[in-house]
Image (tube, rainbow, N blue to C red):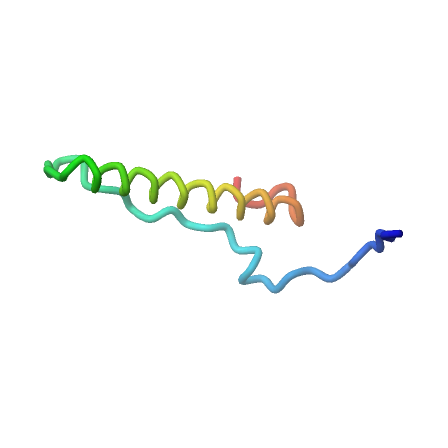
Length: 68
C-alpha cells in the first residue's frame, strides 16, 4: 500500500528559476521554406512552448507567486 510522506526539501534555486523565452523570428524578414520544414518548425515551437509551460507549472507548485 503506497504511503504519502510530506517532503520539505526545496529544489536548488537554478531549478526554480523562471524560464526565459527566446526571441522569435524577425517580424521584418521574409522566408520561404517547404511545407514539411514549416510543419516541423511549428511542431518544434509548440513542443518548446509546452515544455516551458510545464516548467512554469512545476515552479509555481513550489512558489505560487513565481513567473508572473
